[in-house]
Image (tube, rainbow, N blue to C red; front, side, top):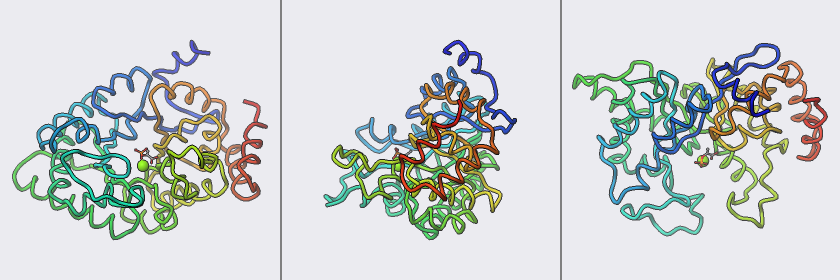
Length: 323
Ligand code: PEP
Ligand code: MG
């Protein structure tokens, strides 16, 4: 089995009936592109930029960030690298950026909510990203978008920095895609509206499941509610994918669910375009995809979404497939 996976390292990700999908890696530092390439990643679907802020005793400068982003896009040799803007807050604290004490940090001041308030920090990051876009295929996404207004506000700041850089004669790519994480149920419900403005969606199931089930993703006592295959979650995912396709956009997934071997047949059936996971899961997922027929998976997903009542019923459906 392992030998078969190795052979798939430079193969495309295709289903049994020839549908081309993208298998990407999630990375946390620019050095991780080595592991991504070694495992045959066709993209980086999520570069968590937090390390720049966490591994430092002060705010990272524009140049420090530029070097890190440039290293990542160059290391991927023209393959797309989706870089997520700062997702600090929730459980991630910074010693030099005091955040208010909150009763519910996961429901509080975090991610894009901080970026829109602290535009000094946000603009520095966007400039670094734009400058790095000249050196490869870079895409940007905003974490924790809940409303159309937030996305438009973030995009407007991006456009301002872009215009300033171009006026100053700094080279920036002209095809930078700007998308958003889909990890808040309210956003998933208005995916059709958001799809008019975002170039792509990336479903963050770790948070989407936590917020949909109202169950802290790190709390053992309620971990039984972390149910990726629950029809409720599948319906949200379907809504997001369908909405993006209706606008000619694409949807990826960068939460743990994207590399889950039970979930993959369902996600292929729901029409997910890009799967981003820890690099070590890529080859086994590519091998699994080769066995899946898209029409059959579409029927499977349809059944799971419309007929099943529970997670257990969905799992039983998937397990009935002869894979
Ligand atoms: C997610 O929420 O699924 C996600 C990919 O982001 P993080 O795990 O960094 O919150
Ligand atoms: Mg998240």
